[in-house]
Length: 310
Image (cartoon, rainbow, N blue to C red; front, side, top):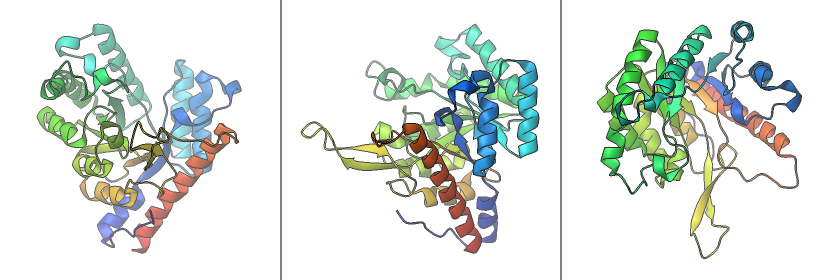
């Protein structure tokens, strides 16, 4: 898919250029000798080398002094941090869990300490039971069951003055998620738009982009390509992750819509994540992952440059 020039409208172009490009650090090959406590620091420094201005990290230091040092480093490097928070869907309703709520509150406190403007969560766990394909519960009832916890999360997020973004995480379609956000009806709960996860619930991801950009607080930028199935006679075709611009996700259109519609468009996080990739078995996978991130950063920066030239 070739790059498309974004609109020449001055406001839209300025918004696109303001967006912060970064990576989902959970997939980046951190040297084993670094250790989990220092992995976020290593990823911050690597992000700076790649020219990123945001980093999503899974593993934050447990040591308070290391955590504070990480916050100072991110400020020095000009890189905003983002992380996932646990327990969001166990705050209220039938699945209420006090320990999960305690973990959620602690994660919010940590995010505030690190000056994170937004944190993220996802309901789906890549399992049928936490998806629209769970045949033991009606889809409408399944989605409704998430509402009490998200309303409680909204109240907590409002008190903490932080935004909670819920990913379309291999669970429901974008339109189904949009209806859920409408029912939550909170300025502090929105979407963490994954641009390609629509494939996992068998819908066009570009339709998810259309549905969720008006709610998007953050993103996972991802491209995937539909190919003939490698298991002939069993499936007609399937989708795999690919280099940005080589798949069926209209990423230029996604960026344009985010600039036009997102309630947090200015400085929005464009966080790069690989899809379900087919790495070359003849080459070191860690090298290929690093190359993928470098290519993806360059692709998104070119989109921003094209917007400026529009």
